[in-house]
Length: 397
DNA sequence: TCTGGGGTCCTAGGACCC
DNA sequence: TCTGGGGTCCTAGGACCC
Image (cartoon, rainbow, N blue to C red; front, side, top):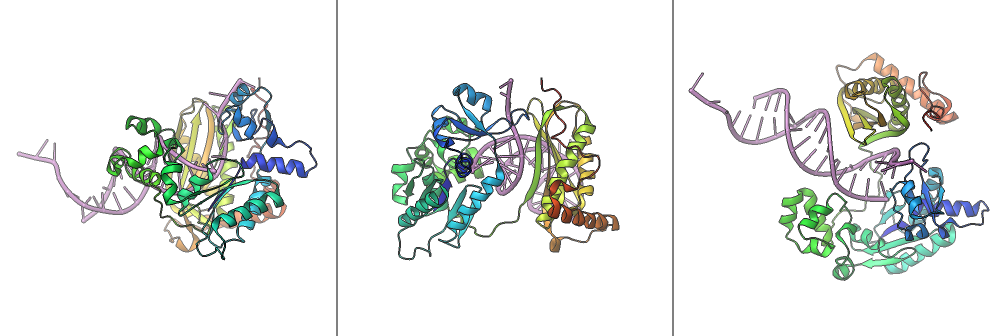
């Protein structure tokens, strides 16, 4: 089973507003959840069904969305609210199976193979659907199938508040007629290439020779061909996997052409990333710095260090060097930091480069984190760090 | 007033080793 | 008197997902 919250961010915002006594249900008007345009983060994060009728798409600039719909209402995002409802949903779903995977903030896979307790999957889906609506006030789509891929495809059929099945014998009738772009993992870059191979529908893709796809797309070709044929042997993974990388990035409120200024922002995002790294009790071998220039060209530079660490200072020093090597004196729109090749303490090797200094820095961060956890993330910070919120105002004209 | 932020996975090319 | 072959590790870039 795949459970998908309908217009998650917007529905959750609507429910929260109603709970707070507001009369208007923003699901019933042309509305979106969007980033802050003044901060140059103006993209559509979620849309109401009415907004969708105007052709507004998730991910597009709010500026375009407004052109499509003159009286569009835009609401800011609030992730703590989203996590609250996401957790509530997850808790409810856990009553039905232990084999449950949180695929994203608003999606779960559930393996009900040994958890049917005499009911049919459809009955269980109906019950979940009803309970979520009654207890929390938002709706979900549920897809039922014999594997994750088909369940996910099924939950994407008609919305909202619907239950669909997609069993093996229904693949041709329900899935093959869909445009190939509806298939999970087929993005917009692959479409022209598929088009050239005369593949327009999922059925077209399914009926091609597998080796033709592999020839044209490599490993990825095999995957989408299998998906088109309803083949997916992946398990529902109920244990939260360790992250493979952790990163933070910011679109800057104005283009920066000054490396000192960029370094200040870099410190602030390195603090966030290393804080999260330590929360996971992980250590990073690789540091990666990414820039996006004013023309949206993205480029990055990374280096494997001589030892793994989660020290803010050491990672910041490395990141600063990378930035210096990477930066080509041009206006920068976004800066990002990422740590990669993560290890648990037990997996770390004692390196000849390990120093007392590294140990000292890691201990210092432990103390800083204790303070952050007790008094709030912003309660303590490094001198020299700028608060982005106080920075802009400039260049607003 | 145009274009987020957090991830995973794959590929190509180069350095280096025996 | 011309230029192997197999392997690992690393970096950069890109596609895709929500």
